[in-house]
Length: 179
Image 1 (spheres, rainbow, N blue to C red):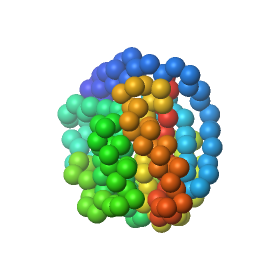
Image 2 (cartoon, helix red, strand yellow; image 1 turned 90 degrees about the horizontal axis):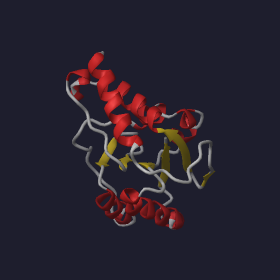
Image 3 (tube, one colour; image 1 turned 60 degrees about the horizontal axis):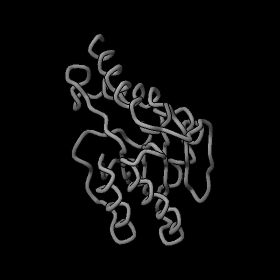
């Protein structure tokens, strides 16, 4: 348990260093099967580390875990992670290719299911059934809105929203982090 506490403190320290100017908490909007939630870094760290501690494939509390930003999971209609990335440029390229090709294989690192990812964030829990009932592919992005390191992924998400009519089988869940 002490190791878990040290990991949480380390993650919070690292993530709180990032600039997050102009962000506010509270529910933003929901349109066209897109969901936007605001969450604190602490909520993300707590939810993710709770999930990790219950997973035999991840090593639970016995090994250190690193959280990078931004992250992107693409989930199948069944809620299985098909793609995971933690590099803004690579994630942006993947998002831009979605109109031509959707990932088909499960991502290699152990990842939460869509249901488990939703349960990590208070603002999404009330929308869980609506998110899960669509039987669509889900682009699940976790980001800092105003951090340059996340800029490419954030711009790709905006572009994806602008072209939603061309991809009715995709929904977007975006979690915007704040301190």
